Image (cartoon, rainbow, N blue to C red; front, side, top):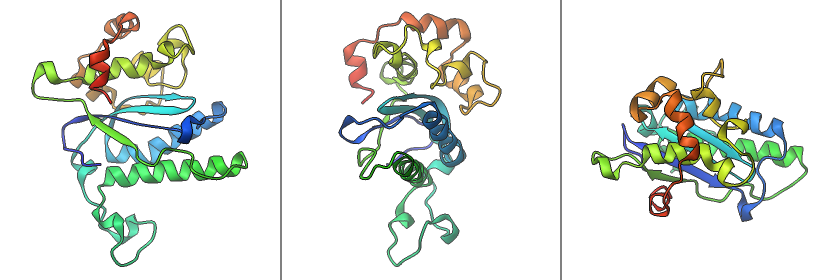
Length: 208
């Protein structure tokens, strides 16, 4: 993934063959622990939503995100022409996040094979041109995804997203809320107003 600093991205992946990646509440919590451990030090997380068979993230790339993985202690293993040498810290952290989570799930649920699709996608949503910036739309889409999918009747009823963090109901948020509110210009009143916002199809096309 070639990210540019100071830009925002919709990062997403789903279960291989659309299979489940979260089987119970503990799995959701465990994945977020991995997000906090691997991703948080390497980007600014602005929003997230974990669904039964996929996940969405809205991230802000910074200088750390695009820095190459160079030091030997940062690598899982060392060999000549190691591909990690040419990876950014963000790409490496995504790889470690998914591989470590998949390994644990396979062991826990006595399964084998790939859990996630091979390539995690990152679609830039930010732009200098106001009409071409889809970051706020992505933020809305991410939090409304459980509602659109018919899992709940409002974003507040889905426990596995950053919606609760922006409502101020989390004592240990994963998101950089201060930066998120600044970049997206979001407050609690607007957040709840977005619940009934229907995103046009041509906008959704720009998020994927």
